[in-house]
Amino acid sequence: MPLKIFNTLTKREEGFMPLEPNHVRMYNCGPTVYDYFHIGNARNFIIAEVIRRYLEYKGYKVTFIQNVTDIEDKIIKKANNTGVTPAEVAQKFTDAYFEDMKALCILEPTYSPKATEHINEIVDFVKKLVEKGIAYEAEGDVYYDLSKFESYGKLSGQRVEDTLAGASERVEVNEKKRHPADFDLWKKAKPNEPGWDSPWGPGRPGWHIECSVMSSKYLGETFDIHSGGNDLIFPHHENEIAQSEALTGKPFARFWIHNGMLQTKGGKMSKSLGNIKSIRELLKKYTPNVIRFYLLSAHYRVPLDLNDNSLDEVSSAVERILNCVSMTERLSEQKVKRDNVSNAEEELNSFVDKAVIKFEESMDDDFNTPGAIGAIFELVSSANKFSSEETLSSYGKGVLKRVNSTIVKLCGLLGLDVAESKSLEESSALVDGLMNLIIEIRKSARENKDWATADKIRDGLANIGVTLSDTKDGTIWKIAPK
Image (cartoon, rainbow, N blue to C red; front, side, top):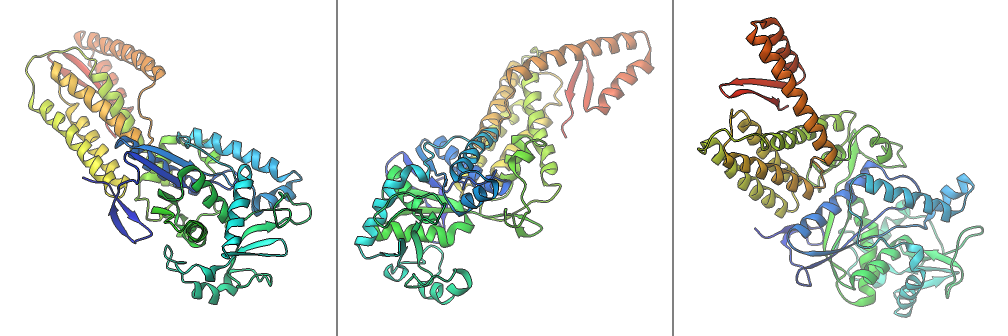
C-alpha cells in the first residue's frame, strides 16, 4: 500500500513521493525557549519524530530540521522578569529542551538551527524582499506587505481582505504599517533589548522569517514536508509561504502536516492559560513509554483530551506489552519437550505476519497510530492466548522469538522502548531461579500431602499475578496477562 498523507494545503489525502528519490526533506516548527516544554508541545515533537521514524523504516533517508527560536518577545519578557539576559534565558531553556527530548526518547533532529545563529541570512532574505517591493521599511522596522501576495490564504483559507477587515480585533494598532495586518520581518531594537546590525538599524528578526530562512538553507527552496501544530496554520505558516514564495517564485513546502491540540476539559492547553503540565513534572511519575503511548493513542489530526486519569489509564496498556515481551522471552528459553508442531504454534506464526501487515497499512494511511497500536495489541493478545500451551516444540520456540522481536520492532517505530535491557535480563534470571525454588518447595509439600502449604503458595502467587499450571512434565509458571 502506498503512503498517503493528508495535506493541509490541498485539504485531501495524497499519495506521497519525495522530490528527490529515496530522500525526504522535512521541517518541523520547534520550541521558543523561554520555559520548559509541556505535554502539549511534546505531542507535536513526538508526532513529527514518529513520522520521521516511519519514513526511515520505509527506506527513505530523512533530513529532519527542527528549529530553536532563541530570540522572541516572550524570552525578553522572561529575562526582564528574572533579572538575567535574554541570551541566558534562551540558553537555559535550550539545554532543558534537549535534556527533556532525550528523556522522552525523541531522536535528535538532523540539524537544530537557532535563529540567532542565522542573523546574516535573515537580513539578506529581508533585503531581497524589500528590493522586490514585497516588504517596506518604516522607522527601523521592516514589514511584509500582504496586499502584494495574491496567493495569501491558500493554506488557511484566510483571504487578505478578510485579514485586513478583521485586523483591528487581532493586531495591535501600528500607524507605521500600510495595512493593519502587515506583519514584521525585522523589529527595531527597543532600549535595553538585544539587537543586531542591519541596513535599517539595530534590531532582531520577526518570528515568521526565521523558519523561511532556515528551512531554505538546510532543505532548499522547495522541500517535501512541513509540520507543526494546527494552531500555527494561521498566521505563522501562512506567513512563511508568503515570504518564501514571493521571494523564490517556487512552491515552498509540498505537504503540510498539522497535529490537533492537546486539550484539558475541552479547552486548548497553553502556558498563557495556566493549564499546562511540563514534561519534567510528568516524567517524575510516568515513564517515557506511557507519555508517548498516550500522545499516539489518538490520530494526530484530532484533538486529544488530557484529564487527571489519562496517563494512569494507558499505564496498564503499556504494562501489558512489557509483560508480553517478558513472557515470550522467558518461554522461548524453555526446554523443548515435544517434536510435533501444534496448530496453535502455526496459528501464532501467521498472526505475526498479519500484525506487521496491519501495522504498515495503518501507518501508510496518514500515519494512523491508533490503528498501528491496535495491530500490536492483537499480536499481544494472540501471544498471551498461546502462552497457555503446556509445552513447546523447537518450531514454537522460534515463533515466540519472532513474536518477541516483532513486538519490540513495531513498538520501536513508535518510539516505545519495550526491549528487555541487560539488567532486566539479569533480573529475569533471578526471578526464574526464585520461581523454580518456590515450585520445588510446593512440590515437596504436595508429596508430603501438605495441601495447605501447597495451596497457600499457589494462591499467594495468583494474588500477585503469577499462575501455576501442573502438567505431566512438571509445573509451569507465567505472569497472567492484564
